[in-house]
Length: 427
Image (cartoon, rainbow, N blue to C red; front, side, top):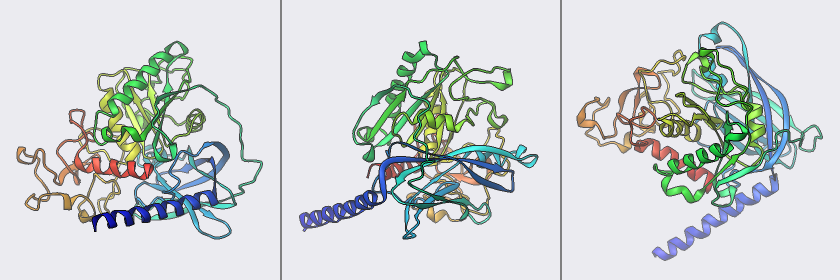
């Protein structure tokens, strides 16, 4: 009976994989379509406009899991076949603009940010729809649409930034692997060997932590060997400005340790030297700092004594949309979470709908909320404090890689979220 069940399951899985594969082959080419956008507004309003469309290298994402049903992210985009009205592809993501909307500056002025989205290149004309998560309801609202002419000669094939690519880890087919591209920031021509060594360090330390350890054979890691004119990164608070490749800067939103870049088109131009799922920028500086945006890009310093902890923490944001679990550090965000709604992040809860989170993984005897006492130090619970707030938001464990530098690794809830995302890419 067991053998019969296993055989039947194998046949069913292969049938649906073949069906999904045929959907991809019928709808898409092997290339990637990149759409550059301008996202503008203030703390209340926002709008999109198209900057350009580009054809880039081979599509690295799954050719089976084309529709994103994760329910996470602040934004989502969907590709609809113009003729049949069928949804062909969707993906959720976050943006620097969304974070900026919660700052004081957004209440005082309007501002624009570059954003970029990618998808497999459609064979036929299609409609792009972008959705934004409503902060009052938690639902995705349609806010922008654009008709894509798949055969348009205005879709650029020009490559502006051509650099050599070095394999750090080559495990196999990009369509069934997680493909990380590492980009250098503030490494000069004479420091390219150091960048390569830092990439090897990144890979080694990544796979020392669960759940990445058991999935090393499903990851590809490549490094684009693109030098900067000067070493380091901008530090506005010290009046230090560097001529670097990707324009990364500390003090993003006036938070000293938050280092990001608004030059997203340049980031994508450099990343386009290879196929990729996620982009990670390594910065040649010993100053403490990092940053990440889910399904977008991440930044981490590489010469600091806490570099390992920083890049793993930021990878949690980038790869799985995990939320920050700390609540005592200063941030520039004002009322980032609506306490009347359940956060979409897997590792945060307001207890509004705790049943949908990790409640079933807890011991039934564990009190909710759970006190931060030695008795529950290593247990799953609902510990008040997280998401930049000491009240009203709860996290799964007293310590985790998403909370502090002293944690031994990710907590079970975060591990589960990362595992789900790995499966999304490799299946």
